[in-house]
Image 1 (cartoon, rainbow, N blue to C red):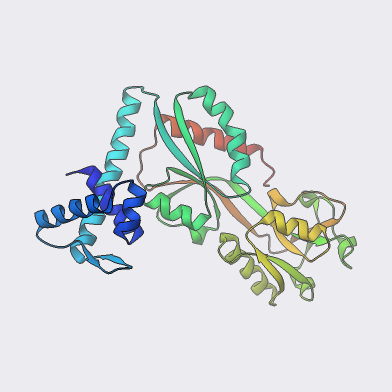
Image 2: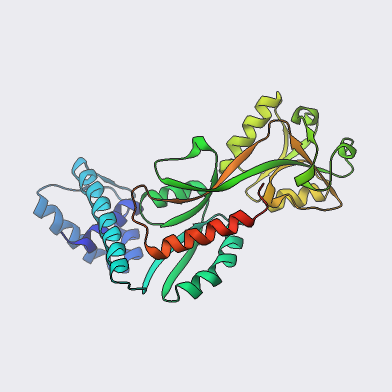
Length: 304
């Protein structure tokens, strides 16, 4: 079987267009079309239903696409095993990073990793958690930094780095601020229900934190007044500092500031920080070394 052709067919499936697929593959559309037609003639059946704006796999196409994914993953794992057996350090892998927090981990770890594995090319890719899960399943991302709750895990493998507490942050001039503390780590406990009349800067619905936060408000017995939603925890922190409203912040973003007061919640909310990789994937020695450095980094991080 032609592995290069498999990759081309998967690109057509991914892009749902032979035009966009040919652009991504840096080949002409006519050349890619000829490859596909030759394969379909060999198989005796079409692999895609064609329209001007959308290409969908036929039942036969679904079988081919699933097999191609499995074969290419087997190739990837086999190459990693052989590289390790041959002690060949010249190789490449990528890591998915969550925007905002991921790059801090990467820049802290990479210098040591590069000293240990100078010939390995390590490529960081920033994307949100759900996109990362999908790309890891497809074998397009090797390792991924993912924050989520237990019920948000899929069939990929999750290596726990630690649990991170979620804190309530309020402006220092809030009527209840005298009951709180300037340091989230030592903040007193309070019920979220006492803030039912306040306005909140909320996390975007695309974030894995959104489901956790919604459950906190539901358990507290009220629907919050939302000023706006943002995918940035840093923006939430700054809005609280500016006195705009309250926010729920993961520990790593709950930084001390004279204009902000913290509370621990009596619900004791937390989520898990994990390193994720494809189920049953073979981890190279270089990837294992990177995971070891990840563990060291998070063991020293203030995630409580």
